[in-house]
Length: 331
Image 1: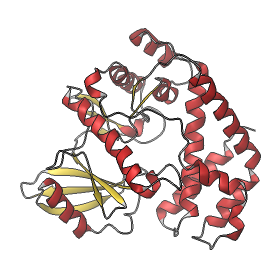
Image 2 (image 1 turned 135 degrees about the horizontal axis):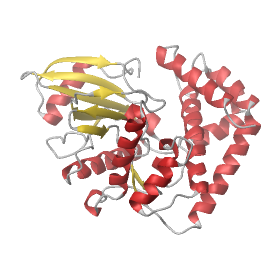
Image 3 (image 1 turned 60 degrees about the horizontal axis):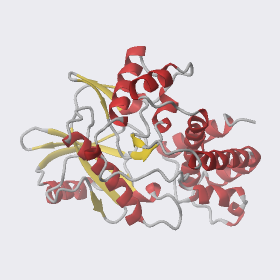
Image 4 (image 1 turned 120 degrees about the horizontal axis):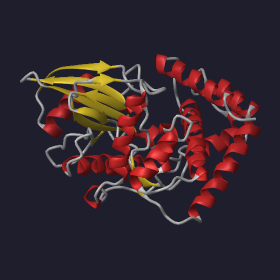
């Protein structure tokens, strides 16, 4: 994210790092990197750098009725899974550092979840295409290792329930409830208009998604541990090799959850994964996850603009992203 969230001060964050991790912080600076979570770089009295991640639990909720504590529990399960993987010998997993109580994260003021990570030196990448074929192949190798991980890394993992996060708010907007809002921010009415103008295409995509979910549930189970978002922005090249970061989306799911975005479109990654694991991918399940990615992104932005917001750099970028996503929907 480009700007720090309201409600998180440097002083409060330093206090929390001291209380939960015993970290004596001498400097802490916001880092405008990534998207979705907020990040800081903290330096302790020994000069050791660490990476701090803060997640807004309101944005992590899957529906209006879901509580922040449920969202925190889901985030805790994902990060605990990453910790289990790292502890079982998966060196490519950049997992959070445990608190004094052995937890992968802590709650802050009931609204935020805070996790602490080692600072990783290496080459970072952005969302988009892979930098080279070697980059893509390197991440495929990590995904294969993940999909064949021992059961010791699965004890905390939750299963994918195929829910589209914030779908209820997207449905409310499609039903044109936006006309009665007390305007929560400058983009609210524009968002409502955009969604209504494209309601037919969005509804068709929701119907197709539901059909694919039904088909998938009728097929034999092929469940593995998945990262969820193994795109270039969640990869780094270190002196020890390729690593995967941002494990907050880790779930037990069909392998296609990781493969749909990893394949360049020619089926080469799909075939290589099948050769390495003995598991063939199903076109319908690949389509399911491809569709859910778009629906989830649209719904997340709709949820954001239905809540109080301003005209920050993050809000402007979110609006541009929403317009782009809707504009690219199939007719």
